[in-house]
Image 1 (tube, helix red, strand yellow):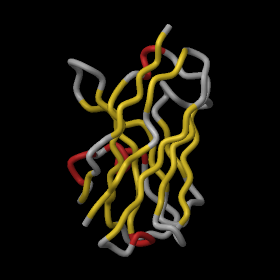
Image 2 (cartoon, rainbow, N blue to C red):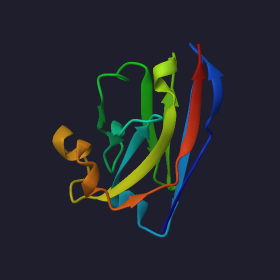
Image 3 (cartoon, rainbow, N blue to C red):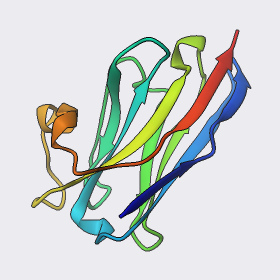
Length: 130
């Protein structure tokens, strides 16, 4: 199983950036996908998640309205579009996959339960300068 995150880089505050996560080795459409980030010296924190069908998304309040998550089940890829980036968004961004029964529904508490995710990618670094 591989989750390959890419697209990170150095941007300025206010810029936009899209990171991607290409998944192989699992039936992608059976998995809720999430983005989790870890800033230097801090614990990992939930950013957002998307249901198996892509119909529902959940967000941490810190990124709501600025970030968008989407998925292409035909390409086995999940995307994180980040707009109006802030220096506090600087972190390594990880994608994670959790097998889930429901096609469309999962709760915020389930989305935030990082220990329940089955597979993790290696992360991609996003640095936002002020």
